[in-house]
Length: 237
Ligand code: SF4
Image 1 (cartoon, rainbow, N blue to C red):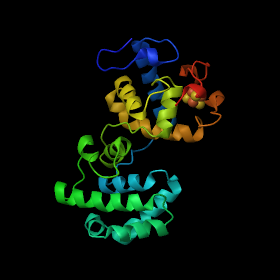
Image 2: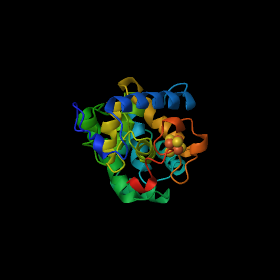
Image 3: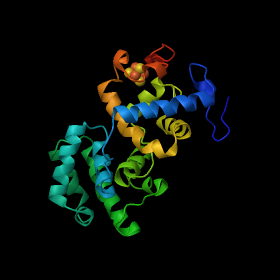
Image 4: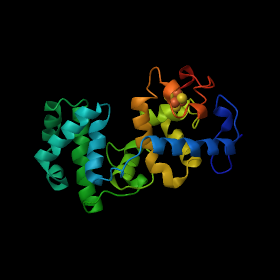
């Protein structure tokens, strides 16, 4: 069965449930996640710094990303300084900081900064399609900039959101992250989108870990098809 609004396919799931039942379950799941992982206020930072953070973070551990990002802004201060920096210098800086893919990331950071200055008057665009035209910015990073930089309703699908959504049966087990985003934005009320990424990241680090999730102590276990054996890690891509 395909929903009316988008080409979202219920038969791609490993268990049966109507679209209305899924929506109802999704609503309860998000309410529990928000209660379990509350935030006084969401991290609404500077869109440009969020964007640079996202480029550095690709295939990097969080602690290393954060350290390099802090060092970078200590040394280069603002978008004007970074845009005026030769690409090779930025690459050398990232290499010395132990950043993987330093060559590509150095080029992305400088070139994206130049484009933002020249084309957008120094202001990061708050539109997903414009963001995705910038070097190094795919859909996940664009959504991170929208959610964490601008405080807009968006659902960045990272590795935690991808895995947990599939275990919870909110997205079919074998779809690409872009499709996961489509299922989530259809199932979850728009005013809750901004909570999904941070709550699932916290949940993925503490309980719903990649290997051996702690289903016994999970507040979502009554609502989770994985906990009932209806979805398995072997199903998930
Ligand atoms: S019950 Fe298990 S699989 Fe489901 S969300 Fe909780 S930890 Fe993850």
